[in-house]
Image (tube, rainbow, N blue to C red; front, side, top):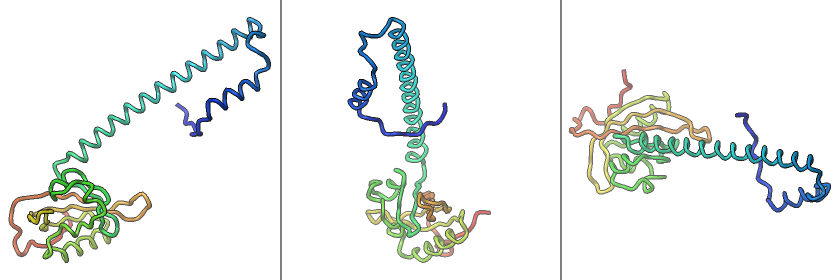
Length: 194
């Protein structure tokens, strides 16, 4: 289907007045051949409108399916996902990350991820973030996170750099909780995957 430029739809009343102004004579004055031609043109136009309407319905159905797949893939994933601004603020997150941190998703937006990183791992996170921005990732590390209620848990973070809609660097981070105590030598030790 050829692409069409989007134009604002004109007011139907204006269209009717313009059509009447350009109409050379009343419908009753048309010859039978002219009336048949006009009827044919109207039918062709009606068919075109029906085809456009069907295309819109099909596009809406495809969009609905894509949204459902996105919701399933992103929001219901078994790991937490988030996108951070260059300044480290959470721009997007999935439902899993919100549940891991004990908050509603909307409460995470515009919050610094550092708010949820244990105090003793803040320096390691800073170095981790700096390494991601310098190398473009992917970079992984393990550190302790803190839920809204103060509960701590160990997490594996995997991150990479992308561009946001304005072209600025944005961090894409996957957060996976795990249940083992990090040893003193493990805290803040970031590594590049082999």
